[in-house]
Amino acid sequence: MNKRIGIIGSGTAGLQLAYSLKNDFDVTLHHYEEPNEIRRGRIQSTQVHFRPTLDREQRFHMPGADAAPSIQTIHFSMGQQKLFVGKLTGEAASVDQRMAFSKAMEDLTQQGVSLRKGRVARNEMETLAESYELLIDATGKSGPLFPFPVEDELTPFHTPQRKCIVGYFTGVSPVEPKGISITVYPGAGEMFEIPALTEQGAVTILFIEALPDGMLDAFKGVRTAPDFEQRMKSLLQEHFPEIYGRVDLARFSLVDEEAYLQTAITPVIRRPYLMQNGTLVLGCGDSVFLADPITGQGCNTASYCAERLFDTLMAHKESPWDEKVGVDYWSSVHPYVKAVTEWTNAMTGPLPEHVVQMLMLAAADQQMADRIAHWFEKPQNAHNAFFHS
Ligand SMILES: Cc1cc2nc3c(=O)[nH]c(=O)nc-3n(C[C@H](O)[C@H](O)[C@H](O)COP(=O)(O)OP(=O)(O)OC[C@H]3O[C@@H](n4cnc5c(N)ncnc54)[C@H](O)[C@@H]3O)c2cc1C
Image (cartoon, rainbow, N blue to C red; front, side, top):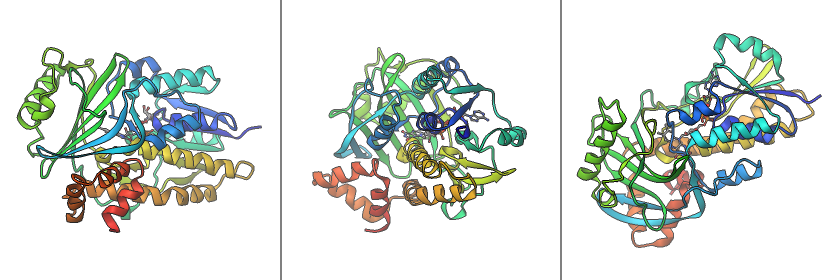
């Protein structure tokens, strides 16, 4: 009989895990919203999946992102000065998670994976642990459900470093060559412009990372979609004239009533394994590796760790699942998690002088511009540039 695995959470990590594990194990995916509720619900992310993540999704035969607008480059500006356009090694894609998650859940059901509806509560943990040989906590930033210990060395902050303000808009023509545009206002925050696919077609995501009480922290008290649109329009006009110049005012609006979000993340890294009443419990994704979205790495980290988790379980397929499996999983992802976490945390502070010089150099050196773009595909390179050069 195949070993039984319970996955709690049907987001980026939980879904990739379900796809990868379903052929070798008896998988149950616990979720608390039906696909249609997710489709009609609020956006939660901007979800750029860089090439390595798209390759992993292909490896596990997940629904593709082929119809998403092309992301081939990273445009970088400091204030109103455009510095460079770096080329990614492969195309990236952003597909509205509401669309991607609901589609994947329907597809998994058709493929015979057992989906169980219901918000899993902390007091159910003991009973649940008895039903499986392994439980995976993939509950995202609202988790974890289990008391995974905090890794103090990788958890320097106790409050959010940014306010995250996101809207999915129609009526903004994309940058050329197609890609993500990043504008940094030192001391105030960042604006990210991301082409994405939604159920209603292509949109432009405008994503502000605002330092609390700074110039970009301009959405206090905004509670409705029309207010959000109005505030974004004023902000673009005042501080982002290049983007404002690409706005068609007659068409500028949120793609739907739920296509905006204000949130703030306190980053925290936890050791992702423990034993519960003799059952191994592993954490994957934001439940254990939660970072500020400033480097756009959360989905990519969740996907990387989900693949490592799959490889670890396959290596131990025939042996008992105990703490040793947890130790092996943590050892295999630790270098990556450390690199992406330290880089991301550093990005929320003032940029180190040598990094500012690299950005300036990239304005006249295409190889340097491309190298900086590759940081987003391979965060270990970014970590090296920040801490070892
Ligand atoms: C503003 C913003 C922008 C971002 N932009 C990017 C980006 O561009 N690129 C990138 O890589 N990352 C980005 N991220 C981060 C990314 O969205 C997350 O890191 C990623 O979705 C984490 O995946 P996950 O599976 O851990 O969690 P999620 O995708 O959040 O999934 C968690 C799932 O668990 C379910 N769940 C929770 N509790 C329970 C429970 N008790 N019982 C049952 N189910 C439960 C939830 O319903 C959800 O479906 C961004 C985040 C934010 C906030």
